[in-house]
Amino acid sequence: MDKLNQVLLRDEIRVGAALAAWLAHGGGEGLAKALQAPDAVIGAIEQADLRGMGGAGFATHRKWTPVADAPPGDKYIVCNGNEDEPGTFKDRFLLEHTPHQVIEGALIAAVATRANHVVLYVNPHQPAALAALGQAVQQWQGHPLFAAIGQRVGGAVSLRVVPSSGLYIGGEETAVIASVEGSFPFPRRKPPFPAQQGVHGAPTVVNNTETLAHVPGILRHGAAWYRGLGISGAAGTKLYSLSGDVLRPGLFELPMGTSLQSLVFEHGGGMLQGKEFKAVFTGGPSNTLLTKRDLDVALDFDSVRQRESRLGTGAMIVVSEGTSIVRKVAEYVSFFAQGSCGQCPPCKGGTFQLMRLLNRIDTGRGVRADMEALENLCRIARGSGRCGLIDGAVTVVESSVHQFRAEYEALLTA
Image (tube, rainbow, N blue to C red; front, top):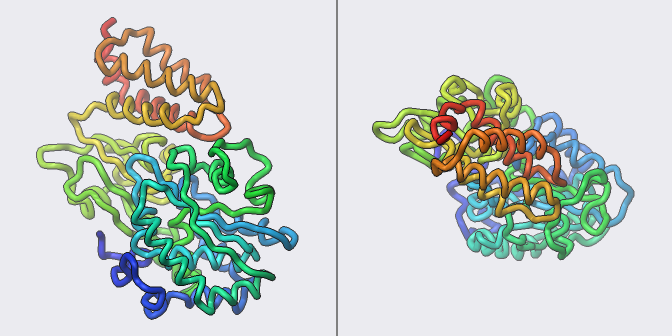
């Protein structure tokens, strides 16, 4: 684990640690400030420029504000810890190693929005995270700080852990809502948005685990402190899940805006011996690939978007020269095909056909007509599903063809 910055990854707080240990190291101070001035919380989050760390980088205060403005009644804060995408492993670390920080962030969100239900939604394939959260929840429920929240939101607050379906699609925010309601995680069309109609029809905030983990520090130290942690105008820190062909894969907390070059070659130790950098799948395998000419890019939401890609979850899957891009893309599209919920026929059928065509090309059985079919399918499939699964599959295929067309054509037999 990188030691440069430990805003989120606090070594002194380990699995199973008592709530008292978290509070002894400054935990709870952010929640106490929120209880003293609940109407100032959302403004602080906006000034800090906290973004959603689960994918799109949507401004956190814009999710919270409509829920806070909704009339009194049932409201939900849902911590989304489903995390099931290849190459992403940041949230499970937070849930296992600093569950009190995540819970405090969710409770601050409840104070700010006057929500009376807090749900910690966790992938059941992460038993250590479930165990740590279960213990942490029991400790919070018996603490005076938790009791004080009810006085601010106008009634008793529920705090519970809900295992997800364990399916990839279960991390999409409307699928999260369906799962919390006890249904199969079918994504729903938007609008209505969760802030308008979420769990059981109530206003709902769905935030990624890492997003909520940033909140206590912002309330404790202030928005200016948080913004100052970033580089060149980017705010805060980011957890980067680095994997693939590097010497030191792992989880690194670094200033938001750290360059791709620095992440791979300084913190990641560079490429495996005898290997050269070829490309990186950013934010998991559902985004545009970055190549050698992008090594200077600052890893923040806006800078990566300017390179026509997305930072996403901060996962960086590094690929070296000599590794087949076609093979990698075929593997990831297979993951998407298996993860499709089947609700939208264009998505289910489209991802399956993309997988079939990629496998034909990858195994040397493809012809030029297969390549043309692959590109045509990408053109017609985008936007055909209720969620972004088919769009993610299309994006990585189109990007790989654009960047590495010669690799594809070299595999065609005719």
